[in-house]
Image 1 (tube, rainbow, N blue to C red):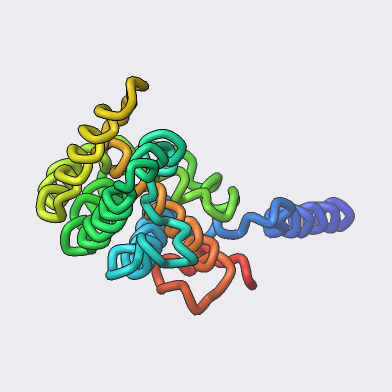
Image 2 (cartoon, one colour):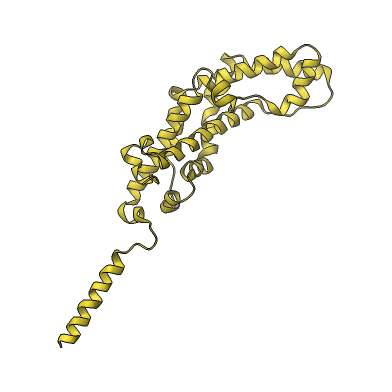
Length: 233
């Protein structure tokens, strides 16, 4: 009987040891609820968005920040439209279009765009919480972009359209295309608003990815809600 009791105690002890051992090293999955994880994702996205706004949606943000990495430069028109204008001493029109398009984008600050992004964050459904925690260092932002890019772009159309008129972007564009068409028979098919919106969103999401990496790797970039995302422990 004593032998049986001893074996039972050993088996029970082994059960607790095995139960407490984490062979997957995924402690976060065991310690936090999905609600807590989603709060962390939202906090991460909000902090990343704030960082993007502070870098790009300010004077000379899109135009010059990070060595003009996010400048809306109409590179797809450089070898056709812009070169044609330059050959006819009209390069200043191209320069004006680029400058004022970027000034327009910079004017779309947090006051203009925050609610659009917050609504998108609030309506985002998460299907695999742990994959976002343990995935790539930009997994949360990329997930957000994948499922909400179209909604955000659609919601941005009206405020961006208003500012494109204020900053005379459409005026410069129409003058450029009229001049170009008078010099060339080669058609140019560009949807101006779609191009501008995509370039703006590309810059914002790229900056969000950079900040998500910082949040995961550097505790000074984290807030209480997204602390579970830390990888610098």
